[in-house]
Length: 149
Image 1 (spheres, rainbow, N blue to C red):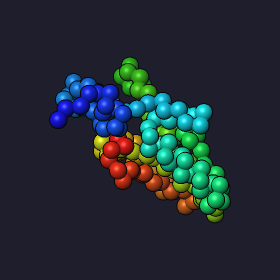
Image 2 (cartoon, rainbow, N blue to C red; image 1 turned 90 degrees about the vertical axis):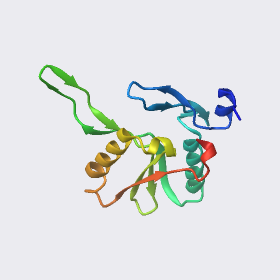
Image 3 (cartoon, one colour; image 1 turned 180 degrees about the vertical axis):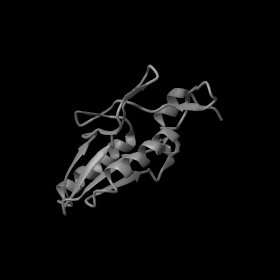
Image 4 (cartoon, rainbow, N blue to C red; image 1 turned 90 degrees about the horizontal axis):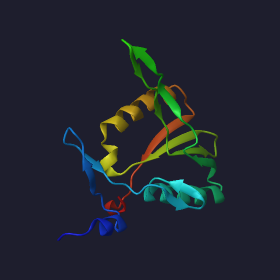
């Protein structure tokens, strides 16, 4: 059974956007979803924002912020006349728990969670900005229902 691209987007099904030069697929994602006067990159982020907002109202957490901090993983440099850009990582959410500890959260679909660039950035972020700070933690958030991707 075939469905149209519009129906796939409406049902939040992953559809290939294009094929890269090396044969890998680039996936379509819903971008710029407006919710409560904010722009989100996915429906999963909207759901997580609503959940954290509820936790804040119930005083389970002190505060949270969406894409508030950008971390430098590797500063830019030049080598043999070629300039290499900075490598940065921005977690989706910064959550301050009731005890003052900080948890950085990243929402990922099953397709993008296995992306090698994301995996490397996540590992560098944890090594440089989480391991040496006992009050910080990192958590990946996945949806239990595949249809939202």
